[in-house]
Image (cartoon, rainbow, N blue to C red; front, top):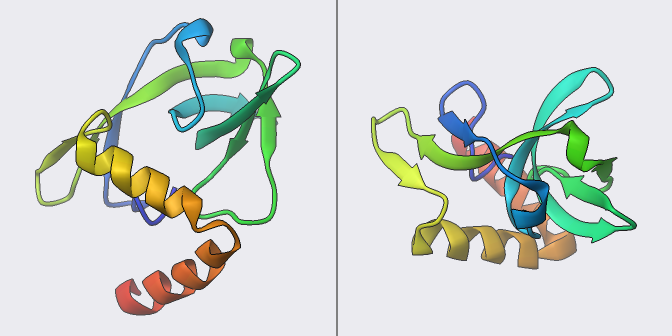
Amino acid sequence: MFPLLREGKDEVAVYPCKAESLKPMDVVLFRYRGRCLLHRIVGMKDGRFIMQGDGVCAFYEECTAADIIGVLGMVYRVSGRAVSVSSLRWRILSRLWRSLGVFRKVGLCIFHRILF
C-alpha cells in the first residue's frame, strides 16, 4: 500500500465489516493464496471484489466476501500521529493517487528515490 502506508513503519487498525457495506476505494485485509493482504478495492464483478495495492500498477487480485477479514479504519504513523481513513485528507490523497493511473509507476520511482 506504499506510498500511503509504509511497510515496517506504519501500523494499522482493521475493523470487522459486512461485505454489503464495502465499496471501491475501501482498503481491506483479505486472504489470498494462503497470505493476508491489505489492498484497496478497485471494483466489483459478479459478486467478487477486485483488489489492487497502491504500490502495484500491473495486476489485480480477486476475492470473495468470505475472504475479507476486515476494513482499514486507522493508520498510526511512526511519529505517533493517528490518521483516520475517513478523514478528508486521507480520502483526497487516496483518490489522487489512484487517479494517476499508469503514471503511478513514475510516482513510485520518485518516492523510492526520496525515501530509500
